[in-house]
Length: 579
Image 1 (cartoon, rainbow, N blue to C red):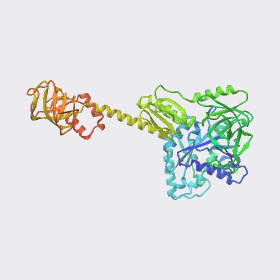
Image 2: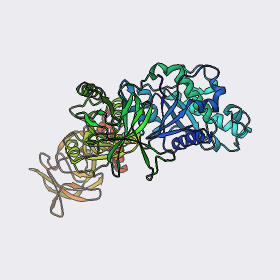
Image 3: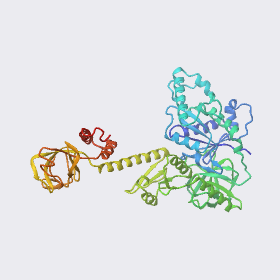
Image 4: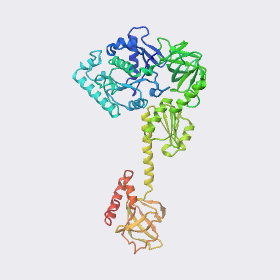
């Protein structure tokens, strides 16, 4: 038999995903047909009869074999398309929601990357056309409706559509409005809609059905006679039941009493189905007061709540299968599958934590694209063990990246970065690296010598030699102990090195501009190498000068001025000095 295609809606927060699903469900209920919509755990099933009634003119006369559409609508999973089933991602097809007024946002790009990486076919819903100034609904047909708008609304919507086409093109995705496509196999369809008033949704549903019918039919073969195969959407605590699984069954039938094997990042979990539950007809999945009905069987494609013992090690996104005497074989198959998609780690790299295997896969994929090394990657909250592991890395990798999980505070040795958008998490890490690089550069630059100008004061050569002791005033820059000293008239020859700096008979490491201090310079001789009123410089080499110039943004304005003046002194004797 042909099962219903599994469709997921992805996109940036507040771009209308929930409103669209609510509108699809509400429209189905409004059709007034018994069973026009079935709500299961994490799923809304729209029968093909309802879609034909609403958008039959777009489907044409060709026979439609799929029984309807199964929308995944469990909240809280940004990466549905990474949730695993045997042979690929859970979703057969997807809707990428974009607010036509705002365009692409970080989560939009993230969702697009995930769809492309898993080769999940998708269409773009350009939502909130009703926000265009002057827009009012004219016709149930979206194209006729757009053509009937006033000039202001038409120009605005067209401009935003072209911007969306350009944004998709910049991401390597050729696209256009669905009625302008050269072909569905060549371009991605953009459907203008208003999830708020329902405009364009019939066209959206019809296009999904058409694409599934044309391109996915071979992938939709399923049986209700065999053992169930499915994917865990959520692990949730239910009063009176303990831990339960909200799951999608995409093949076969699951029965109360069946043994099921559930993949994990360690050893697969083997347990027995104690109960299967679905909401009562009037139930709202997001209402904590929803009452559930016990059922004996759940057949593909549908959603169901599974009550079973020993679910502590199960995480969202994992595949499972019912076993009929072949437990070990299924354990091996699931272990291999999860092993294929998990984690090749490096000897040195960041530590990753994510809320489910799908999110972890997506995060790993995007980090690999940016050549960011990964030392450890696991599902679950950040632990002290993660901090210890991160702290044993080099500073650039002493980081725990936590996606959509509970975190711990950063320590002196390890930084914890947490976010619920993968792109933000990666951006935060790149900002961390940028600041770390700046800190390292600042520390390196702080150790480099700086030029400083000083003048020997009158009657202040206190000792002629062994060592020369003289009084000076610092006129530019700051003089450090150990600096190499040259005369301004002859800067190519070193007089000596500052062994000691004294201010008011106290030894100091550094003399600032304006200070009058006594210097001890071994090797220099008063009257031979220097005299009263001579101008001296604390010198830097050409290599040191070039390094300071390269990192000029880390110098103060005064330091830059002194560096410039010093280079001018040197270039009087060598025009190419420091070039």
